[in-house]
Every structure is written in structure tokens, then in C-alpha cells.
Length: 183
Length: 269
Image (cartoon, rainbow over all chains, first blue to last red; front, side, top):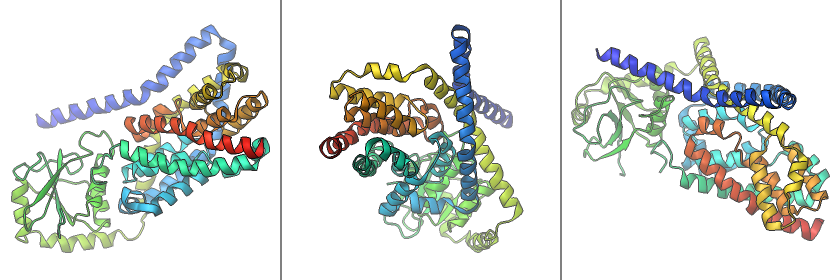
């Protein structure tokens, strides 16, 4: 009897989880269907634009998949806690800044990896620092310099890195860690 | 607590009289006890209400608290491996109250596990084909879980890219630096895609005479704030994290824009 109740709960949770995951794309698809009736030409253009985005995602997603696989193979939660937990100190901050600066591709390609790191013990503050430093794109700096000049780009880069530490501190303070261990 | 030896017991309640929980990952509480003095600290298990990854959160808790041993009714082989890799002894198959199992530990009843634990760790030093397969399955599952939300985000970005034109953006900026900076941060938060687009739009706005405060807040918010990507960020990192991070980053898009634009106006304009 207990087993039956447990299985029911498990199935219920699975459905709940599936609905939660599928609800958002379903709503967006519904918006597309409505727009397809109202403005078919523009909606088809939007669909094509999605195709382009998807194509540009293949490479970064592949890269993230490989990084995650290596993480799952070689990096243990104890190491993540040591290098990216709240006790990681200055080294953790520098690591998050560096990783944010060199990470390429759209941010949503990186979410699976960040989720994995968070579950393995990475601190919220360091995840926020990583995400903020993605505003600095070393490979795109020449283009930015062409538009705005090097004085602008250098000052924006310095202020962005400084701001990332403040953002990390605020997010770390305002969002309580799920694992109560990060005291 | 300042303990010399720490053990963590997965339990149903927050004190020593509580019964042991069924599973290490989903038990309601983690009781951290000094077996010598029976001083304890009860921590609600961060993974108790989680749908996925609950076991890993309990592992992280045990590692962060630097415990020496875990006492529980049941722990999955993966959980055991992660704990053993961190040098934590795992003792399973126990029943009774927290007090009873800690007393058994204190009396040295589990010493054979300590020897076994070292052997268990030694067995996992190499990487076998099954370990690679397991890691591949894990990675694929983690990806598959976020894929539907990711597709939703891409569809939404396609809509924004098509339905919001650069002309519409240009017409909104009024010329008042303060208000324009706010507008810049707002548009940067809504729009998404390759940052090069933000440089192009920013460059056009600059040519149209829009202040650098507004241009910079747009460029910074473009990457740091993501309203369109919010569902994916919530699914990956939690609702509170996503909301707080985006709100803080919105404010900082404006704060970063102020000194950057002042320097630009003084030295580069």
C-alpha cells in the first residue's frame, strides 16, 4: 500500500515537472499561432530568425556539452565547493571573472552548465559574477573600439569588472543559498 | 560549533529524538552532531523539496560542513561515491532515532565501515567505460531537462527581433539624458541576441544625438539583464536568483553607464 502511494506521488511529481518545463514553450508557440493568423509575413520572418539563432547555437551548445561532460567525469562536488563555494575567497572571484570574460556564445547555452555547477556547490555570488562579466567580450572588443573608440571601451571594461564584484556581493547577500552550509 | 569530529544524520525531525529519514537526499533534516558531547545543529535539508538534484544538494551540505561521517537509512551509489571521494565515511542501513545511531557510532560499532570506506575510495581512482557512459547519460539528461525552455526562449527572441524595429527604438529617446538612460537600460533588458547588434544600435543612437549615458546603459543591460531569457534562468538557477540578479544588474547597467559616459564625454567625444 505504501509502495502504491509512493509510486503515485512519484508519477504526480513527474507530470508536474513535465508541465512546468513545457508550459513556457507552449505559450510562446500559441503566441506564434495567433500572430500567424494576424500577421503571417512577419511571423514567418520571426520563425526564420529563430532558425538563424538555432544554427548559431549549435557550436556553443556543443562546447558547453563537452565542458559539462568533462565536469561530470573529473570535477567532484568537493572541488566545486573549494574553488567556487562562498568560502573560495579572492581566488573564486578571479576564477568567476576570468570564466565570464572568456565564455562565448549566448547565455542560454550556458544555463545547463551553471545549473550543474550550482547543484555541485557553486556559490550564487560567483555565478552572478560570471554572468555579469559576460558583458565584456574580448573577441568583440575591436568592433566596439571601431564604433566608440578605445577610451570608451577601456573604461567600460574596467567599470564592468568592478561592478561585477558588487553585483556578486549583492546577489550573494540577497539570495539565500539552498544548501545551508554556505555560512 | 567548533567540533573535533562531526557526523551528519539524515532525519525526519530537527532533534536527537527524531527518527532517521528514509533517504539521505530527501530527508527533512540534516542533524550535525558531535558524538562526544552530543551537541547538535539541525539544518533543514536543502534538497528535501527539490524535484531533481536533491541528493547532490545534501552532498554539498555535508562537504561544506566538513563532516567526517554520514549516518543514514539509504543513500544511492552515486551519493556514496561523491561522499567517499570527499573523504566522508558513509554508513547506511540504519534505523532508530538520531540519538540511538550516534550512540552506536560512539561505541565504535561502525569501525569496519571506516576501513571499507577507504577501499571504496581507492576503487574509484580510475575512469572506466561505465563511468564515461554514466557521465554521458548525466550530461544528456541535464541538457534535455533545459532544452524545451531554451527553445521557448529562442522563439521569443525571434519575435522581439522581428517585431521591434530600430526606427521604433530611435523614436522613443527624447533627448533628456536621465530618462533616456532609463529607457536604454529598459530596452537593453528586453532585447537579446548577439552583442554586436547592441553596438550597431548604440552607434546609430549616438549618431542621432542620443546621450552616451543611454547608449551605454543599453549596451550593458543587453548582456547583463535578460527578461526574455528569464524563464530559462529560473529553470536553471531558481526564481529568486533570477529575479534578484536581473533587478541588481538593471540598476548596475545605469551605474556603470554614468562614469563610462562621463569619461567618454570628457576625453573621447
